[in-house]
Image (cartoon, rainbow, N blue to C red; front, side, top):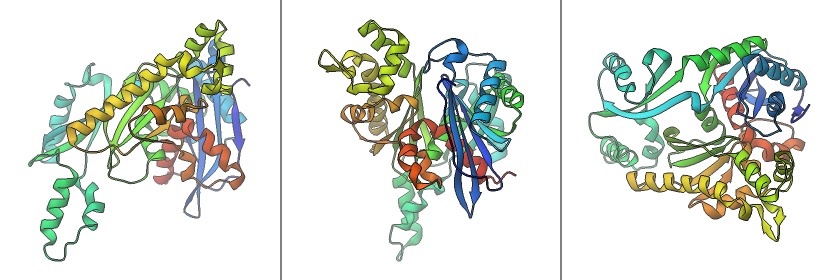
Length: 387
């Protein structure tokens, strides 16, 4: 099957769960289970959606529910999935995430204020979205507090640590994360998984799944760059909280298109070159990075601007950038990003949070970035210990 990449791992312990990421160009799934208190990788797989829309592998396509359900069923079968308990990630494009500052009032009063406040950020009627929110806890600075000597004046030390850790919160104010998902999107994805014979435990916006799978617990700000086929998502995360998010309307398929045009070849031929040799491919003595500079440089320039803006606004240093998504698997892209970005760069390693056979280590690390969302949403489902 075109674009299919699967690896059955080993027999299934109890309480297996499935994480699903339906992207613009491919479906990714990851099945994990808890064994001896450890998250164990059982199987994972990827299926390109381009051929289902009469397009080449790697191409972004819009498919009807029936076709997406068929593709998901095919992937479940070929990946030897053994559970029907799943959770699914919702694309950022079908949702809205905003961090707003509101008065520190009683939660019941805050609950009445949220829908009114949300209207400022949501471009559709509130009745058309499912709304959720939560207060960002100040306890996120506890790790810093523990590092401070508080033998003489514990209360003073705690207060000073909290002010230093989060100076953007004025007295009497709280940060509230507001999340909205289009009801139409929820109905569509529920229909897909139902047709595929699965039971959905919950839906989660992909941004939270990705952060869970590739970031460790820490306070310092980090940029997450998620490059897909049609777009690139940029997340600024601090203390485990998504502080800012941006959607850049360029992705890996734009690189394919530019390469095809530059070389006078078909998109299918360009995709083969891109996946096989990437930025190492030479054209008249120059790499692809020189042939298609506008797309790569535009994406990374946007990332640099977001980093600079955040650092200037909050006087905090963004320590590094983590790269995820199928687009960052382009050979040579990580090295190119290291040259272009103003911070240290790491490739995401979501499978590093799972127990898997040692002989698969190198392969899982290499392919890991594009499974960040699927791993992340599976980890949440496993953590909630849903049977």
